[in-house]
Length: 233
Image (cartoon, rainbow, N blue to C red):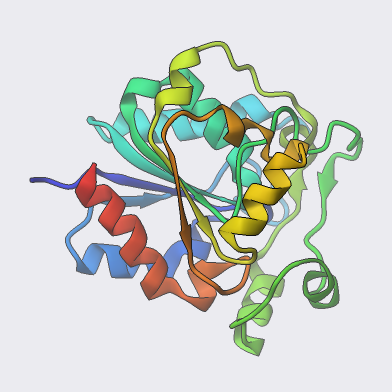
């Protein structure tokens, strides 16, 4: 059986570079894999003023269609908003969605965000706000050197969701910074940032205890999980 092509989408502030170790591991195992840099995240001096959520969704949809057959779509962190919207656009072209330490929200990531862009956090802010187990000084240095501001549009825009077939796309949450039990508890509490997970009709959970950025702290294990999903799809 031929494995499904894989499309990797990084979270806020990140480009395709964030997946480098995972891409190398997947390709070494024979997988067809593409890592995306979403519009506005190409460089620090990119013009982000007019970038919208729809631009991010279309970028993902284009990569899915370019694969020529149904893909495994892996989205990290804040990319879950655009990734879930992509499943609404082309549900038949997505064999499986992998949510890497994230889940699709009910609406916009932050509807009250008004700025043109959101600067990358400092190391101190990252350590205060997210689980950082397994991250080294080198990881933080690379983030500080390569991360760029996140466009404001995709943060505040509300995704257009109209096709109920998106709820049937098989999906997996890889819980890394928090456990799957914590995720499910937050979902039961009605947290909007995870709300659309409750709408999915074919959902499973995998625990991979580590940081919020497992592509850096546990890249081999993350690649193995995503690769197994692609082989099963």
